[in-house]
Length: 329
Figure (tube, rainbow, N blue to C red):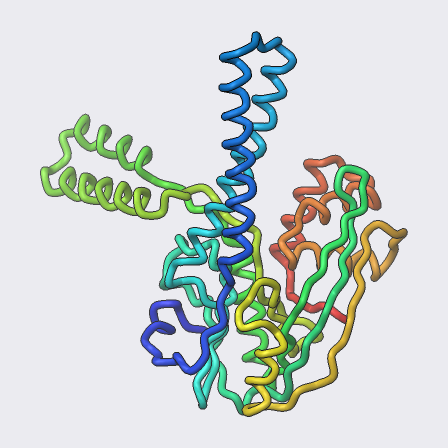
């Protein structure tokens, strides 16, 4: 086992089977919300040309148009990401597997980061399907989500498992990308003011041009999606979220029968709306962090530890920094 970069992963001809996020769901959602946005704009235009719009009605049109437009924009971003070459979760061949634990939505991070787990089939003891029902509070209303996972029992040394944990934690702690163009322009101003050598000024100019190209390419500088499709549970079980992945989980298990043992399916329930304490509370907070749901994790810290919002956020950030991805079923 070793961690490799996306660039190194692309060098392997592992095209026997590629598992990736489906674009169908995002396409349907985009059509719906963009259609609703156009309907609001069109109705406002028609109504305003035939009748006078009162202030309250104008606010209503603005409110609906804003939310439908915002959701359509977010869904469009996910849809666009699903068509990029970086949209793959798992690649296999007859000898090995590559598992990418960076979300396909965070494609603009450097391709040189070690975010791909390379293992051989002999390193996999078994695989199974796990279904989870997860409940949480959203605006004082209980919300239930359903997850499907592909669990993979790894036959690796403690050092190799530790390397995987460290890679997962590093990805979780990644900060949003920011552009340094402004800082470089200030550096250029100071260099000119201090009459620096021409080669030094030219070097700063080249760096500014390079940063501008990166900014234009990424277009999402300062944005990070809290989407983490892979986690390590029970010390040596790699849990891969399979919602929206094609081929689906049943076809995937059929494919895996040629290479490893299939274990019996299991079902899990996590519920942060019930009373929690002790280890159950700690596990629930860690579960929410691993899923990228820091909002619920912060809410739990505020509810049970009496923290303010800022204190709870700092607590969750510190916990995330020290996360070891030890999680029990």
